[in-house]
Image (cartoon, rainbow, N blue to C red):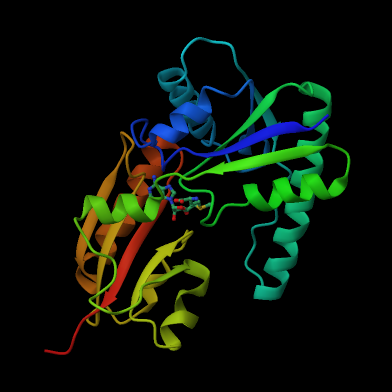
Length: 263
Ligand SMILES: C[S@@+](CC[C@H](N)C(=O)[O-])C[C@H]1O[C@@H](n2cnc3c(N)ncnc32)[C@H](O)[C@@H]1O
């Protein structure tokens, strides 16, 4: 019998940043599988993220006819490496995650259960859930069909906070990572949204040529915002980032970086 799964975009942390479709989908779920990243050494504080997801369930699900099962996340080597080694390592990690999910699906859910995956932000952007669920299907161990419910991405949350249109008129916006920033800028990108940047890669760019709109833990109690000419505010961003991490135990930040037009 085919198990049914719903991959539900739950927005970037704010319990009100879910769509009506997402709330309806949440109410169809019998068992939520939630990756428990705290199982990974050195990732303390991410228990707060599990708590945020639980709060979203409490607030939006009518009744208590659902279970939450934490799936320990396989360990991952996060040391800097070449792009190819990084790609291989992420693929191996997806395979290990798929095995962990397949095991939990078989051992802790029934064939009639609707299984839910709470996906941070939107499932289409820098998230492995779709790939991992595809890999679970490839294992052939679990017969699984699934639907994707879109969510508000942190990209949209950032734009809304600053009342920004991300693209300049008729021009593109590059969505990239801290790891790729230098390469993308060298290739000519001049209007970029940067995610997954634990090292504030923008600090290496000429501070007088760029403006930044930065936000951390958007939509949550610990939200912080800093914007201005890069060179003038980069230290403030660094301090705000450290402050968020110290108070919440975790920090997720994103920024728009735009090269100044010549005056
Ligand atoms: C693994 S990606 C997930 C992105 C997610 N699927 C989305 O649509 O926003 C995690 C990155 O998203 C960004 N992010 C997610 N939630 C955020 C938030 N509440 N505030 C700021 N940035 C956030 C950060 O750049 C973080 O490093």
